[in-house]
Length: 180
Image 1 (cartoon, one colour):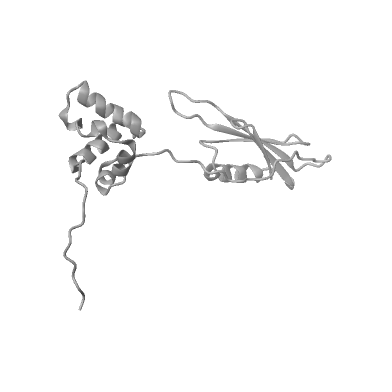
Image 2 (image 1 turned 120 degrees about the vertical axis):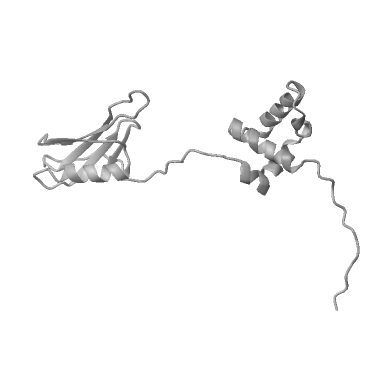
């Protein structure tokens, strides 16, 4: 039979309440989640300048404990943090200059952004030219991405009346040259 120990463990008194954690989440939502020192400065100002008593306990919180409170389930339920999607780099080809040696079928693909108007993104013009024959085909896409480029390149490349051996793409907005 298991022996039961009757003893009391020491527990530190909780200084910060559930309401304090909710207040941290509220301030973080309003300020887009600043670093601890900046947020603690807001707590100090709210209490000392604007006399808001809700911030009395939080005005002296340490940055380390502030970050610990941000990890609590109560905070996570109430905090709304958003971050921009991080683009991923996809290797399209290798960077080398094509050498057509007088044969058609070596294409240069040029992309040019038309520009923005009233905060709206403009289209990208895709211009494909054969290095030797100067056959040229042009198309437009709304963005430079695999989704749009795959379709337009397939359509434009199918229009050339000869075998395509190689094509190079120059992205003007990055200055990057890719050869495929």
